[in-house]
Image 1: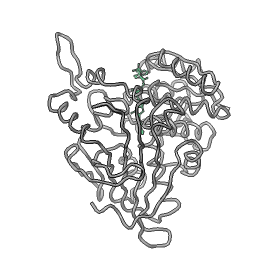
Image 2 (image 1 turned 135 degrees about the horizontal axis):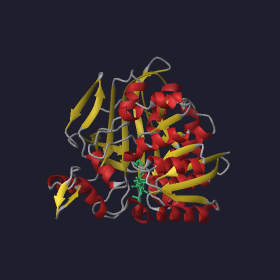
Image 3 (image 1 turned 45 degrees about the horizontal axis):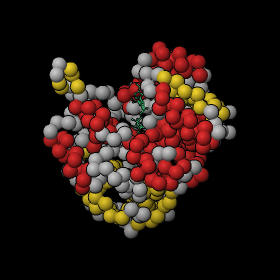
Length: 402
Ligand code: NDP
């Protein structure tokens, strides 16, 4: 039915391409392009072995818009799925406009020299996509992505009005390393070391990075410390669901992770401004990425589960106040057995495949730039259950008491 071009051959790209190949009735032809072709070839070999599907591979620097436009014109996909890094988002959107093809990603654009996590750069493409009769779907991963769809699902089926929303991201996995990140270290550390911001009563509230800590007992994982953080879906959810008075995002980190990160920060290794070293300019955080384990290498050793979801409190369809918790539990070892990647890549790559499927099937369509919560959540929720990320809803006694 549809040809797709996936850009980016990291853990997320690998899961998405494996899952697309497992749905060959929807994705009739898959091409994979990235900066390092050997990584595309390794994924294609694994896909061939596991599913029998052949994936075409290409080398591309996605920041070179004319070269990428030529590649898109050659491959002729219905959709480009951007699973490279947030730095490439705008260049890939430009190439999609030039080639007349729909666009999708899992993380919002970030300039390399400032960790801002804001949608305005991509929202500014609204008229260009609209005028071209094309769509861009932003943030079809887990968070953002599934968490946004969870929220619209609760709103559609259970609530008249949502007043408060807490997004809880728990990785209870253990990879056996003293310090490693479960997805791209540079992006992960930029996110974690940013000032924490949440939305409350029509305004942003800022707190120093990692300064607000709470314990929460996650099903299938147990009690974990979680930290208040900024996360990009807060911006789009407060824009598209303005009724929500407070939106917060929490992520769990172990004490070892915090200890290492604190030291790295204190000695300047997480800086993103250039430093002169032996006559060469280097960015400390990029150097740190080069010496840390590749997230993809953690797959074989990671054990445990992730539990990510949303707690919403508001007025239910019956007119009474209620609190619902909707979440998915994903097992690292099961994810690895199925696709050769751990659960953090799996929980992002599966929703990327689902978002792409809904676009190419025409179930999620429009002209312009969209976030996940702007579409009907039902077909997405159904596909989560069918494709490895089952979810559940349970009623709580009340909202979080902190
Ligand atoms: P990785 O670092 O493992 O993979 C990124 C891939 O992009 C690599 O193959 C890399 O190539 C490639 N790449 C980098 N720069 C370019 C370029 N200029 N041109 C072409 N390809 C390039 O990252 P992940 O797979 O962990 O993450 C992928 C994306 O998913 C990121 O944007 C991340 O922020 C997002 N994400 C979203 C989540 C969500 O829930 N929404 C959760 C986790 C991740 P090379 O190997 O040569 O470096």
